[in-house]
Image (cartoon, rainbow over all chains, first blue to last red; front, side, top):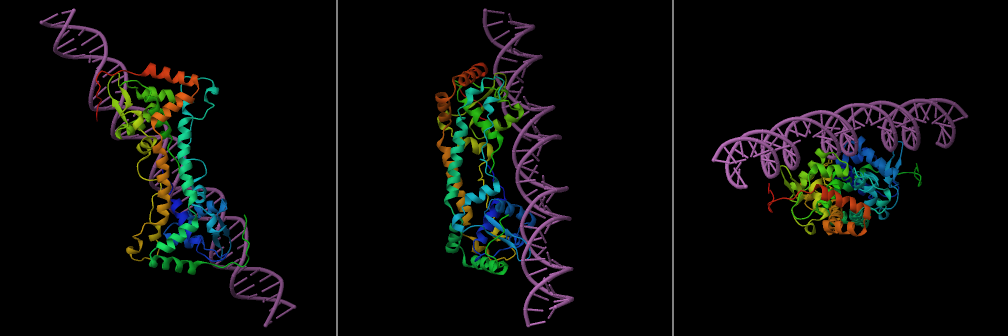
Length: 172
Length: 172
DNA sequence: GTAGTGTTACTCGGATAAATATTGTCCGAGTGACATCGG
DNA sequence: CCGATGTCACTCGGACAATATTTATCCGAGTAACACTAC
């Protein structure tokens, strides 16, 4: 029961990208510096977000990342699943069948009750994450956050965002 | 977002121990053989359950493990936390403060909104696990499970359970 | 026959290696901006 | 002065190590049962 450290970085980056205007982009290196992370490693996570159609990447000079769709349509669940993988945390290895006493497989057609209970809990977890949209995170930050912190964030975005000419982005 | 494989083994072992009568015990080696696991490794997990007062261990010949309290008072959350640790899966590293632009720490007294959302989801996860008691697992298995599988389980318990003389167990 | 005693075999428990996943780093492919050159 | 073109610098993307965590194994400490001996 442990989430990778990259999840936190991915969410922060997505929240930052939600603040850029229009179709501008921010380079991954700038995001990494903003959070004190290794640029090369952060790209790995941003890459996963791009593969899941949450971010779009623009190559070349003045390139970078931007949200692939409005922040209202991106949930925390989308980001967590993109970074950590879609498979559930609890994987039933069906160890009840691995004992020395072998009986017919037809005795195990019903799903393991333990597995069912664990998956039910995970559904509750994912449902809670799906309730929170990225726009909620940004709105809450702008409403409740400290003015000084907000000023720093806005200055960072203003300084690093790079406008794009064409409205359509690279679609892999 | 990945649970260790030992969680599944721990829950299965606890469910098996819930079926023994009185204060009898089952050796860890027998449980390991029952699920096709390494005996020495399973003991590591059973040890954690013992440290958390979920199981009791009886040393010496005719020793083994048994539940430390009735199955009605043991939840899946108890077992998961014992094996995986109590700390939450999402640990906020406060990377928002680690950027090159340093401002006063008083700007970050309010908890990070991202952290709050992630912890809220995790509370939902734990609440769902806390709703399921070990006795529910056993009852569901006895009601819905295949008769052949139940027969194998009962035979295993009958064959490996070892009655204890004293009613009080070792309290570490 | 019964109580005491020494041995023994069985249990758990923690310390020790191997395997795997995660984290971190590096270099290459691709692309658009920019400067230069020609008309 | 305007357009075409070649170069270049900047971007992302995937391949390559280092570290941390998880998994697996081994050996030792402890304990109660058992057999044996003495009474």
